[in-house]
Image 1 (cartoon, helix red, strand yellow):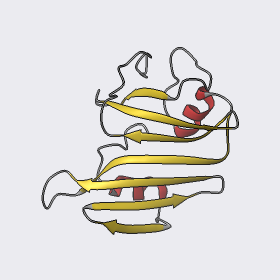
Image 2 (spheres, one colour):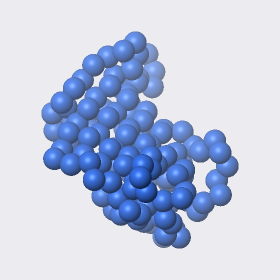
Image 3 (cartoon, one colour):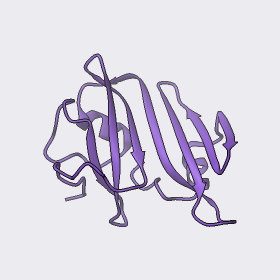
Length: 135
């Protein structure tokens, strides 16, 4: 998931196979991929007129959820957050492999992380938590 934001939508098909749903609403293209215990929804939009649809946001939802941020990150193939945090923090920055900073938001229900959403823009809340990085 780390480098999916800003990538052509074809990268999602290469990683997750055929979409369970694929529809267009205005300039947006919405895709849904499904696994046995997860659902991934993507919103894509061209970066320029006539250009390929680029992934602008994604939401990974989990049937069982996770107890910690570290578990959720591991399931998504993201580098571990530093320092390790519990479920009280719901917004995180994410640095992709090219060094761009994106926003991540956690959805917590009944004390478990049920979904993580990534946005193709830097955090607008002020970065108080460390950037997720390979270091």
